[in-house]
Length: 107
Image (cartoon, rainbow, N blue to C red):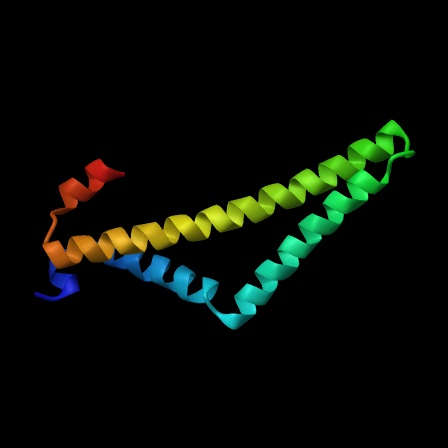
């Protein structure tokens, strides 16, 4: 039995989406972008700690800058991890012939 016979049209569309994300996330260009994002977070973190004698307003601004970058990086990494997990789950379901109702209960 083929994957498309076991998954609903919505599940097939979702599988295509998560496959696209995981393929993109493993590409050389994306890996470079992710490294640069990590570098931006590290730089903002260093700037925050290096501003020992700055005013409270400057310190707050630097902390906000670091937190925004950190939150964005974590969000992107979590999204990619979720897509990879969903892809594995959908592929496992298609190999086992798990009905759509069982998938909905797992989410």
